[in-house]
Length: 315
Ligand code: FAQ
Image (spheres, rainbow, N blue to C red):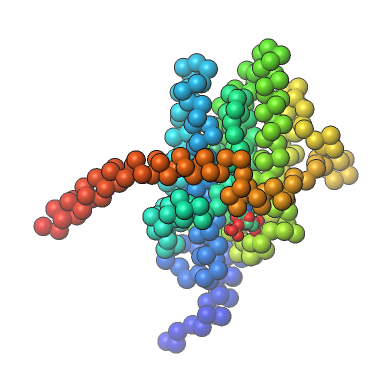
């Protein structure tokens, strides 16, 4: 039988994806589909790994034993998500070592939001509440991704991230019920995280480079703006219900649209931050490099153990 041409393979691929069938690692896929997925999944993995740092800093200072245990569990979950995602990216043919080298060399992107400082305990609550809510809304959409391993990883990750939202919300409710100083601390944190969290969903559709192809091949099933609007519609009533202000005087519900209107973030700031020039990029990468260096003996010991086991099995 004659080999199918690339055009025929592409038509079959698009027909399958159009029918909602999942693409699996061994299947034929267009090069751009593979490249886009590696780009997105590896950036997502890096985000989970670097994303441990802003909150991780607060583990020694968490107010009380229960909050400390919960925060440790949350930060460990993020490490696990990173591992799941590196594994999903590896199924597309890129090694974990290569991805890690790119991150440590400052060549790889990761979510803008982890390049901002966490000067107060309220930031831990606000990251869990706002940042994880934005992440879950995006990831619930990505759980429908046409690439099977990514969608399945997302389902597992969303379960855990939903718990993270609860821990963040609970910490903020405690501050909301607390002293005037505690309420001020929470409001200040909401003010600082509002725009970085809006930026998490990516640039507006008119500036998004990859969305069109990603939507066509169902890597994503919603645009950046749709995801951001969902987040705003979900979170604004929660912020106001706790008696806090949304730090945007123009944020109001539009009855005709059925959505909240909001002021667009500064898209130049997003560009700067994701390209390495945010308030904490240098600090975050320095911590990752140190951790990678100090963990080298563990990786070598595991590799030696694995080699020994393989030799024993072959003998
Ligand atoms: N940050 O053409 P588009 C979490 C880059 S996980 C950094 O619109 P796309 C859990 C983009 O990569 C949070 N870079 O791109 C947690 C591209 O650059 P490139 C991470 C951004 O892919 C919680 C360029 O700009 N989630 O929070 C950002 O269609 C708490 C053009 O943009 C994911 O990674 C940004 N915000 O849409 C952990 C989800 N926006 O590659 C710890 C998966 C854009 O051309 C604590 N990823 N860029 O050099 C996605 O959904 C998408 O990749 C977007 C961007 C929506 C991030």
